[in-house]
Length: 429
Image (cartoon, rainbow, N blue to C red; front, top):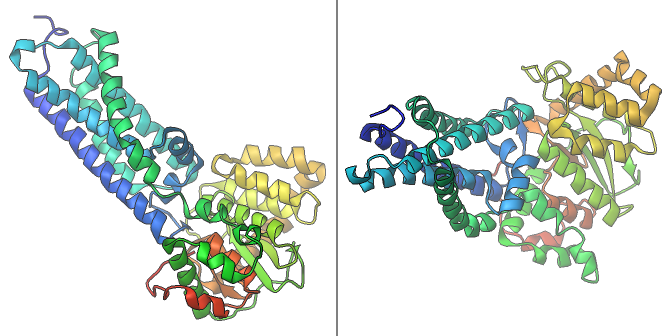
């Protein structure tokens, strides 16, 4: 019997089935964590982030979920189910179908698809500057599967490729389609769901707080209450004098933010504030500051290695005072996940011209960024974005910010009595 026609050993098939099952099981855990993250209100890019939040909320992951109806963790579950089903089917067929070249090829195709997928996810994580420790477990399991199916059967070849591809694609498609209802039921990001409701009260015939709060679902109402609890418990601290104020200087709600341009939650906050400024002109002002998560320009961050974070903050500082500052900073945040030094310089040159290019490398610009980062430290932040509302630490949750605008900045407005009691253990940003 030739090496290519030799059937896989039962031990290797059992190993593949076990690895596929474990990968599916762990993907269920990650999907459950995604639900919890979407429901708890944690929206931050922490120092040295080792969570999966940045990856799950990245533009890459959102596009996958929007297009397919299934989040990245759901795709991992579908892969694991297919990866386990194929070797189990081969084992169930017994020796009378000992060769089954199409199933062997299907397993090798599934292994190759898994290896490519985890490589892409690892690259996206690296581009985001985060380490998804939970995802790393899947990487190891998929790597083990590929090691057996691709490396352990070196002479297996790709016999019966069309039929093998049909088995691989069919098994994965069946699992994926079955998961679509659960995928569509997975909560959206807190920012996206909250932004969709901004202005709902005004469209209903008024913009008072008593019209806005009943629109909230129970989860949103709790998060607004938790945000209020944080605000009320925060001491009033001085904020820097406005440097690039947007909105009315005498607005009753004065918001100062500290962001990292490559932080997706900061990009969400930028969009939320843009919507609020457009919906409620004259009722709030925003002063945007920067807290790059890189030690090259921020002494509070121990690690370095992502110079685009500092350079992007310097570029945003150079745009301050220009009439197109909102469009420029919006473009920075929109490109945040893929920015590198070259793209920042190109954007500055094409948008701000020679004056902006000179500003970008000026020592004074870097000092402004460092001063911004230092000014955030008294507020004891542990990640970005940091939102300070009338001198107190608040959160970036869109319904909370809208509620405070409607309340005129008063955290003790009588309408807030309708909210549930704040959770003292909530971790909000």
